[in-house]
Length: 151
Image (cartoon, rainbow, N blue to C red; front, side, top):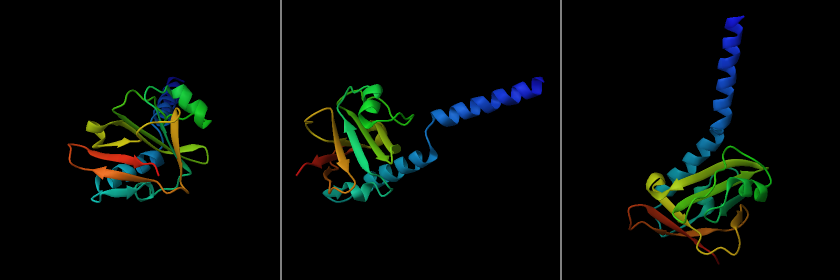
C-alpha cells in the first residue's frame, strides 16, 4: 500500500513539473528563434526569417501587462505565457491554432537581444504570419537590437 501511494505521489509530482514547465516544442521553437536572432548579420531582417516554425500570429504586449489580461486578449490560458514587467523586457508570444508555439520572454542581458516595437496604438501589437514584417538591426551595443519597421 505504501509503495503504491509513493508511486502515485512520484507520478503526480512528475506530471506537475512537466505541465508547469511548458512543452518541449515551445522550448525548441524558442531556441530556433533566439539562435536565428543571434545569427543575424544584415541591417534588416524579416520576422519570417527568424520564426521558421509554424505559427499564425505573433503578439507583443505593452509593459506591465498582467498574465490574466494577456490570456483574456488571446483567448486561452497557457503555462508559456508570463506578464510583462517593464520597457526593458522583451516578450513575444507566437500562437498557432490557439496554442502557444513560441514564447520569448526576458531581459536583453539574458536573451542576448532586445526587440523594440516603438509606440503602441493600444495594449498590444499583433503580426499575422501572412504579413510582411521587418526589423532594423543594430549590433553596435552589447546586445543585438531589433526595431520593428512599421510600414
